[in-house]
Length: 368
Ligand SMILES: O=C(O)CCC(=O)N[C@@H](C(=O)O)c1ccccc1
Image (cartoon, rainbow, N blue to C red; front, side, top):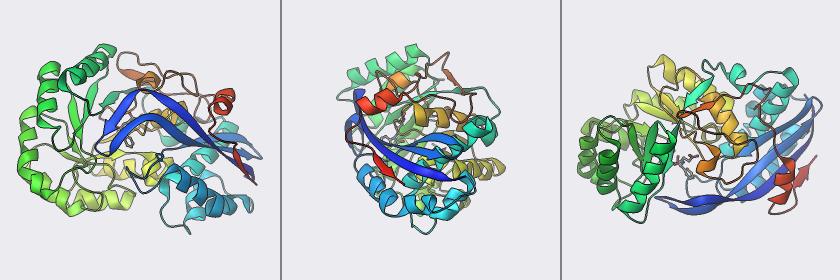
């Protein structure tokens, strides 16, 4: 494959409602899209990095710079062996996994569109629909939270995930458990907001039959998560910590995580995400597909990934209207709590390029 050009599009999309996590409030999504033009056709990839380095050290401007200053040239210098060659070609740059993942996804999209193969087929999907959960931000108060959760229950979501932080945890969880009833699938995400000093407090969550508690401590504290996992009943699930398959295996073997949130952007690409799925599957560790407020481009790829056999828990693969009034692709619409796995070549979705232009925050960066 010969890449003729790599275009970086920075676009802004308003969120249908503010989204608050333990690291801040988002009212819009500023997203970097990668459009590659190759000798076998075009492809689109979405970078999951946020506009600020609050979830991870990556952020949109840094992604633009590392692609423009280092990564693009490695891909434009000469013919490459397709998407499988991208990670090895980019290994000379340390980290920047979200930037690398977006490039790989765009190249994989171009390659598979040319081959007439869908992402799901290429990954080894075994389902044609995936069960969908929904992520609920930190609310101003309990009634507002319950109104939002009720909306998602009415829409058919199969699992509720609540963002928590110190001062907003036991009370909202108790209220939502009461609303859901005993059998409802409910989990929490702390986004690193706690420390080992909070173990006794976090143990009180055991009363609410949660599926899991996600990333209570900072990314590097794998050992602290193992201490917590031994001290509470609620299964510990890691997100930010799990940046490669080998880190996932280490964390599993240390007893730091018994469920893994897989996000292709966080781990450096969909091909590494598929490898991570395989490593978890052979160890009997359930996985689910995390979300990063993706547009339909990333959402299509996530739904394909979530269709692999080890993805046994509903993921953060919500419908497009959870975040956006209008999507960059045909919207993903929830049907009985599930989304269909795209079957067309590549991601299987068509990018509305007029919207990419309309929503552009600046002229595209074209690298040749
Ligand atoms: O449904 C979605 O796409 C968002 C799911 C979600 O809560 N993502 C969280 C996370 O920590 O996993 C997040 C939100 C914003 C930014 C980064 C991460």
